[in-house]
Amino acid sequence: MSIFLCFLFLIPLIFIFLKSIKPSKWKLPPGPKKLPIIGNLHQRRELHPRNRRDLSEKYGPIVFLRYGFVPVVVISSKEAAEEVLKIHDLECCSRPETAGTRAISYNFKDIGFAPYGEEWRAMRKLSVLPPGPPKLPIIGNLHQLQELPPRNLSHKYGPVMLLRFGFVPVVVISSKEAAEEVLKIHDLECCSRPETAGTRKISYNFKDIGFAPYGEEWKAMRKLSVVELFNAKKHQYFRSIREEENDLLVKTLTELALTRSPVNLKKTLFTLVGSIVCRIGFGLNLHECEFIDEDSISDLVDKSEILEMTSMFSDFFPGGIGRFIDWISGQNKRFNNVFSDLDTFFENILNDHLKPGIVESSDIIDGMINMMKKQERDGDSFKLTTDHLKGMISDIFIAGVSTSASTLIWAITELVRNPKVMKKVQDEIRTTLGDKKERITEQDLTKLHYFKLVVKEIFRLHPAVPFLLPRETLSHVKIQGYDIPAKTQIMINVYAIARDPELWINPDEFNPDRFLDSSIDYKGLNFELLPFGSGRRICPGMTMGITLVELALLNLLYFFDWGLPEKEEVDKIITDNEVALGLVQVLLH
Image (cartoon, rainbow, N blue to C red; front, side, top):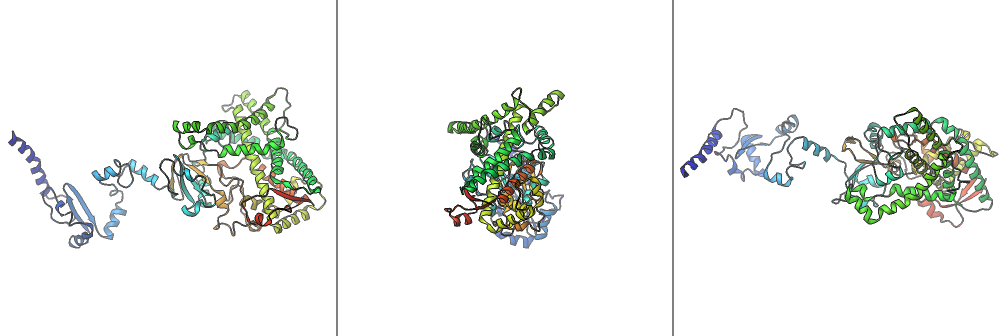
């Protein structure tokens, strides 16, 4: 029996031996002599990389070895390396599967040791991600969320930077060129929105335009808003409302000027913008409304911004664990309490429009209700619901009030800090329009040039939001040579782009003269200046927002002279260009 077993063992050894000494039909490279079965294994120490120079000198730039049954070719010349790494790169690009590399690569689930194939190509694609700060296990960069100033994001890691908040990849874009790739070249692939708990709530389950992900429903809503709600005819129709509310502002400020009382910029301008937006959007006169007053507008805007900026754990850790942490930490309860006041306000607006016997007005929500009734009659495939109406109310209020009011506050702040610019623009206004106008109209805006440059410089230096609303990729896309996978959030840092020293001379200075001989505009075609965004997601209310800011600022500069209150710390206000003025002194011109 033992003789039989030895015979069985010897047969394969004899076969292997005969095969190892049999001449190959291939023209193999030269190399040192090989022993039967083990090949050159006995020479491994002698063939250490430091000694292989001698090997190539003896056998040439391509040396053939055999370690057991494994053939190994050693390349030692530039020309041979070029053939392997360039000419025959595809044929030579896999990796050997060894016990050691299998263990340290977790069964070849990596990039460095995995053999070539579909899985490796998918992993390799992920490896060309943008640079970014080091990430902690599980939480990623969440611990740095409050430490990342918008101005300095790109200084260390470049204009395309990758962060990871929990399980969510976020790419921050901080250059004109990268922004153009996202918003123009790859606009379609990058035009969706991330679905977060906060945006789901304030958009009424994404039934709006601003926060809804890209799809058929969003396209129908976008078309409706552009064609029916924010068209040129509607814009002209609402002109009288804008002018009337500015007349009331002038009257209020005149009374303060006569008594030399300081002006609370935030309260005054939020009231103005809130009154205009509520009348145009909802047919709601804040001066006469039963369920809201002028003083509450700023508070509601603050609450809407809290909701936008509130991060839920479930946003970063999808699934049960995130929702559990939100519940146990009380985050859900706090979030719902803040939303409750906004929801009550929006509900009151909607109920006001749906009451039987109410005379229809021509505000935006009335227009949507009329379309909803028409869709019902015509049997359209896409039908508006009350959630669509509330989503639109939310968009108009959140996007319309805070952005325009904060822009106006910064405009007065910068002009007070820069009295030479203030004098120059007021001289143009009062010379062009004359000194005896009792009322400013929108027609007056067409007669001014330097004034328009001042507005443009405000939009550059102080965009209403430092980042555009985040986008989300629908598919894999390449930005500036980096691979951005599907479902990655993209944030455009318009603040950093607008202060990029490679694009602007003395970018931190307030200097409208920089636009004197420039064709750069802020309507989405010049990617160094993007206060309203660009592409499919450009702000649909851009025209209304621009006109609102220009008309209000023209009234403020024509009728009044502005300065600091006597007790204000002038040096601090002038040097700290990140803090807007709170109180200003107004004098009647």
